[in-house]
Amino acid sequence: MDPAVVSRLTELNRTFYETFGGAFAATRKKIQPGVRAFLATVRDGSEWLDLGCGSGALAVEWAHLGLKGRYSGRDFSQALLAEARKATAGLSTAAFQIDYGVTNLLDENWGDDFAGRRFDGIVSFAALHHVPGRAAQAAVFRNAARLIRPGGEVLFSVWQFQHSPKLMARVLPWETIGLNAAALDPGDTLLDWRFALPGTAKERGLRYVHLFSETELADLARAAGLTPIDSYYSDGKSGDLALYQRYRKM
Image (cartoon, rainbow, N blue to C red; front, side, top):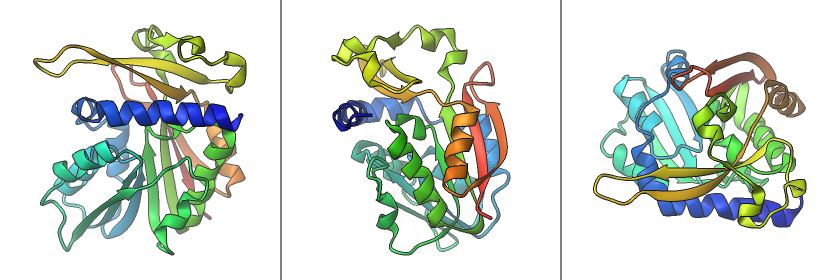
């Protein structure tokens, strides 16, 4: 993908989350079934990195479950990180430590941000599909692989909006933002988003989303030295609005 197109898509999503961060956070307080299935497997005392932590809903649930260990949330959006810090205020303890920071998954060397830290596991729920371009997507997997300890696990989830007629009705032509579809990768999609907080007018935003297949995700994992060990669909009324894949570092 041309760097200028990557930059355009990156700016589109950055503008969306900085503009609608508060409103978006209001729609993402519920923990999805696929994420609950993951939380049931977390070992007490382990250390996890959450890439694209958003507004902190996962950390809140983690703390309420009474799990010990360390949770590190990272996101590129200052607006969402502000919501996360507010949501988890007072929940960090000596037994369960919470920390946040800015990480931009579009920077191919974002793994350098962690200064030698290594994790028992890494999760990234509904974030990878906002990373445009095969090179940057591959870098997410490579950095994740080098940041986990041997035997550690990585779990990604990506949106499967093609299973929802409502969401498919929100797909827009790339010409809406002045791009030619030929400049995009197969699966790249422009979606609109509509929401109104109580007492406010409905607002509309635009986001870039990449539609991943099971094979595409597994190929990226193997190229980074990760072994796929599980794949399942979950979430939404239909139970298949997200694809989850788990990998292990052997």
